Length: 322
Figure (cartoon, rainbow, N blue to C red):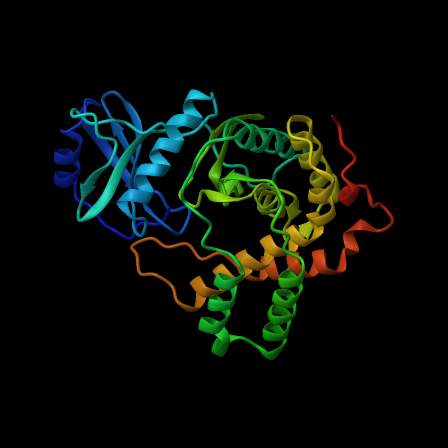
């Protein structure tokens, strides 16, 4: 949520005049994230987040805003789009599609506890369950062909060792990507900076702009790779806590348990590649945030070696709690 598109106070005042949300008191850019422009806006009626969408098309945004409304009706703690005086949840500001959301309480957790990992496991399972049968037409754009395209783009910047590692992992994934795992709506980016907590109570799931229809287990793997790692080192107790909580609401199928190690590797590879691409080809912006690609290289290597498991295989066997 870096600031790529700058706005002025007169622009903001004019924009908010189209809503019944009070008069603007103050605003500031939000620095977390790397995809869209976000401002925290305070009005005489409360606190809001103004998002200017830097790359998503209007038709995609319409589906995402509709999804957020659906999740809100299912009591998931997600940002609710605010409608203007004409009932529109999507407008334009400074040449970009823009939307206003009620700001949720709480803050992001830097160092998740076991309890935090259990909470995120439960909420992720709730997300997957409440969207069963929900038709979400946005498909994933980060499949193996995307990984190969990113590799080709950044190839000249890579060391020989990194190039060999990525190619070897791509070959593994090509042989270990089943097409018949359960699919549905996934968040696809449920990192710590996209979740809010009030003390130990989860109060907000943010940034659904990577949401798509894809393999549910991939969503669990993406989430686990961030929440269950301490400074890039996998914490198997946190991993077990997240999985046990998730399975208490949506028990995994035997085939999902079989391919869990491969999905952990796939998730780590995708985010290593995306961070490398962002580092070598950064976008311009007033406030930008670089995230370390090496974190996911280390995570990928640990999943390939499974060194953190020792003699405990339950973390992959995923004994069902149902």
